[in-house]
Length: 159
Image (cartoon, rainbow, N blue to C red):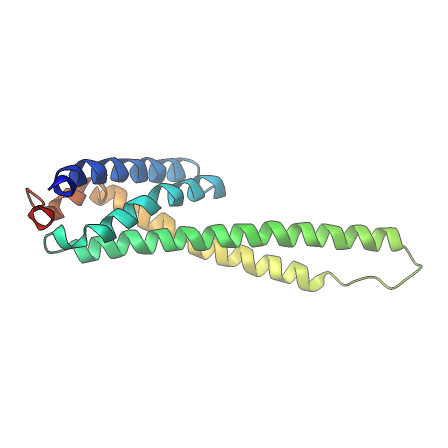
């Protein structure tokens, strides 16, 4: 009984947090930090939706899959951002070594690192394009605000 009474408010708060994160991500033009914060805000929503899945009306599965997909994309963007940062540090370290070595010993090549960086940047751009397109669509459709259309008036499944 208790779960059925607290779930609508809990979901409402989680949707609001995720929605605020989405607005910040859009305002900040896809900054890695804003997207990561949105992902962090979305994870509890995803888990709560999984937990209460049996309580929802028809159409919920598509909504839930869209939220899940967005959180996955945000995780992928974050992973790419982390890889870019690590690759940049590694390349700087190699360049520093090469500069210190001078003409004394053979230098490590960095061309492959530059190519990998370029590929990662292209992958991030493509993935962020999907995220951004979806966020704009969500904004137009009031996707997050309309999540309540799937909730029954009372969550009798848990009563």
